[in-house]
Length: 214
Image (cartoon, rainbow, N blue to C red; front, side):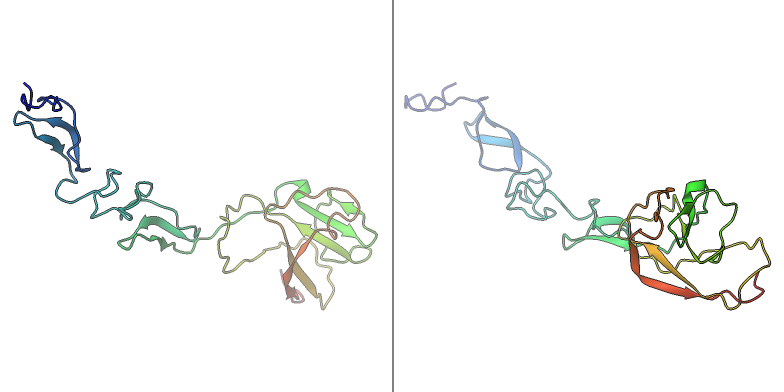
């Protein structure tokens, strides 16, 4: 069974484990002819230079065993406006632009809207919102929950719908609407100045409801 019975330095024999030097084969053994041979794998004849098990023709970096990405694999391109992100033929992660979607929410609890008087007093229990005169001008806040807008999403448009419950009005009525500069706005509290002290966006929009509009 000695592969070379004339050389005491050669002790190999058939069946022993060995290394055939080909990273694309497995279970390398000394065969009956005393040659080291492995069992071919899917990468045999194609190559797997870094030995990570990903064939050279699809490995995005066949010189780095830590890189096992290959075209067609799922990935995350970091853009929340795309879907079905995949590694492309150039080994870049790209997603398909998602179709525009819409979402809707309404004020649902008492501390999701608030009226703050000019003195800083905050009312959370009013049955309606005066925009904005109620024994003096006031600051009004509204909070909309569960909109499900992913971080980084591009908002192309937004609207607010009100329902009138009184016919008394000022004409003209000139309002300014701003957003709260927060990624996760908290509910309003009755603390003095709680509405007017909130950080707001630099962007704003002027709104002048038409006289008699319902």
